[in-house]
Length: 338
Image (cartoon, rainbow, N blue to C red; front, side, top):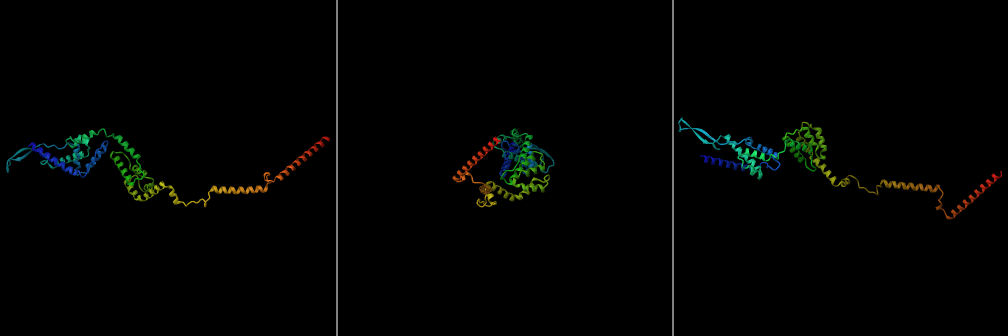
């Protein structure tokens, strides 16, 4: 009888395993990778939440499974007889209550979820565990060194929140998706961030081309109560205008001279004398006029006169000097006589 019960249990387990494998091929749980145990544990639990029997699966991760045992059963001695007798039988999947069968199904599914999310190294270690509860504890022990301190985790998340910024050239959808994931991590780890801080950080880190629309949103919305999801819905209505602004900025950055040429008329030096040319021309004309006046009002310099005229002027100067000397001698003589 014992061998028969064991065979039935083995066949039932194999049937459940095959059914779960067939169902599990449609969607896979997240994979556990080195250094990612904390995130994997959270994602596995969220994956289990999508299952119809999620409460039983979560229960199997924390508690050992139901074990079949010998149970007594009261049966009549003969058909139609009022006398009864007690018989003992071994429980199996088919003769237990439906609640126990549901728990056993959840245990098999929990094992499959865990093993499907393992790589080969970890799989070979936890595969010997008899049930999902033991596997869950074994993985936690193996990855204990990779899980960082809770306080350090919060510090890193706060730092990431303060340093969060947009990336040049990326779409608003990409920016919103990154911000959404970061806020989920903050909430999951119970980091205190007010609604006003979320909204301010979300708006201030947008690209410069969103500046005008960001100001409109700040003026029209109450940042202490509105969610950043609604701010995103409002902003994405202006995506086409922002695309035009961004395209113009990129064109200006790529070829600034071409953009200036479109806005300014063509320059011709011959038609538009520069200030320096005008100033030089004015100075030249003024110098010419002054030179003419000087020539008219003053006697011609020696180097501009004829040679004969220069000689005559020298002789006249000598005569004047001799006359002056003679006069001075006369005056001296008369003064001495008197």
